Length: 186
Image (tube, rainbow, N blue to C red; front, side, top):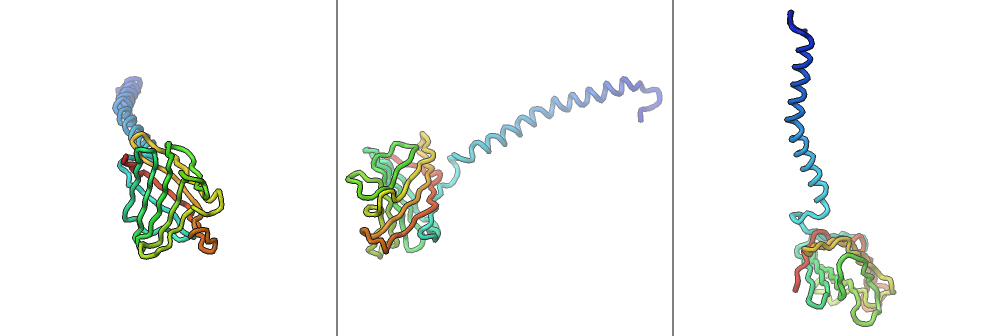
């Protein structure tokens, strides 16, 4: 309630000025908050400080915890990606001889020379190396969803691999995901 003798018009003007000053001081704070939130949302997909990740399933079983991962691009333009897992040092190798960046790379079999390859090795103690070398054509695909100028790789992949065409020994590699992996020139 206004005090006796206080002009209600002056009280209204005082309140209006106080709100205007509050807006004037809150606007920069609101702008800063909006900028921070927007920057975080935009950088979630390609954050150079994010950890590199690798995941896939081998016949429905998740690949073991990754203990080593690397990606190299040689002078001839071939991409070699290797992930080694904790369980028996199992490994996945992707070899793309004519890597050009973002795009789809079929993992086909029986392609003469310069074939894109997907290889799975269950253990260094095992002589069995699973590959797409002799699997039916259309055995799999690597899709590079982002390859930034700094050489950071984001990709998905899946495919079928076996031991020298032995279809009884075919493994299905699914849900393959490579994220935020630095590609090093060799």
